[in-house]
Image (cartoon, rainbow, N blue to C red; front, side):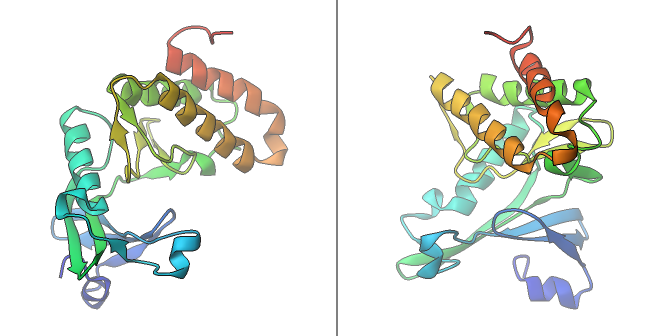
Length: 216
């Protein structure tokens, strides 16, 4: 029931859809605003099955590993959605998966505020500081891009989508790759009207990340 979109729609609790990987529904539940995400395949694997994954054990399934990752990160005080429930539904050799989590209210993706916040150095520094908190904790985000960084009204930064995220003890190369991936995302999404601000905003983000002037 918790993981059935039809149930929520019939209850009049479906508030909308979220943008991002997979299929995510915005819900109004008795336990507060929530997000229900179904795991969906992308790229060529989707040609075989858009929502089924090879089953190698419940503890290794994507919904349960992301759920546990969010439990751990929440316990560390990092700004992530609080996980509520996860489901790995086995079908023979395959499974389908869902994740239910708290919805962070009154936020926008960094990608959607670039134009209006391109002259807000403090915002970009805060984004860098937040990413650094995760990296200092050893967390490697599998898809750090401008849509998985959320900006609250008070400019508090949250990271979302920890599918396939992992911990690493020696992650300098992985962390650099995270930053490069984010920069590529910003370059792709940056509005032409403020193209000249990209270099300065990226420098502010790195300044917040390193806590000092950007290394040469």
